[in-house]
Image (tube, rainbow, N blue to C red; front, side):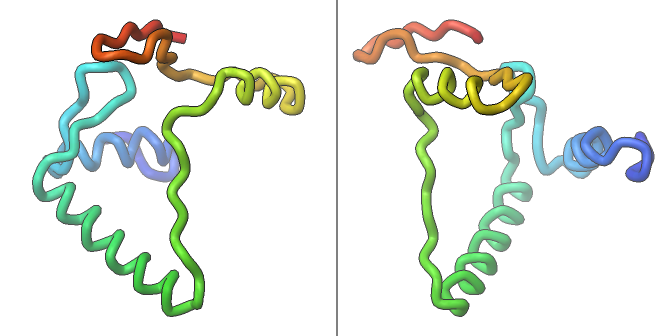
Length: 100
């Protein structure tokens, strides 16, 4: 296993797979959360929700789908900005996806 001090991201990914909290997803870079992993997420979410509300704040949810124009605008402001994402090219009953 990769040492945590050497590459935290690789270490974490290997850890959650070996602990059987997730499986690698069918799309590169994705993971499928297994039941125990999902339970860990539920417990973390409940604790964080309580802490946020105890501090007098509200939770927020951010969109998964954003206009491509926003990405282009971000590229103008951040040098080297290069998003890696899936793009919805047609929104209807049947969807067509193209990789970016």
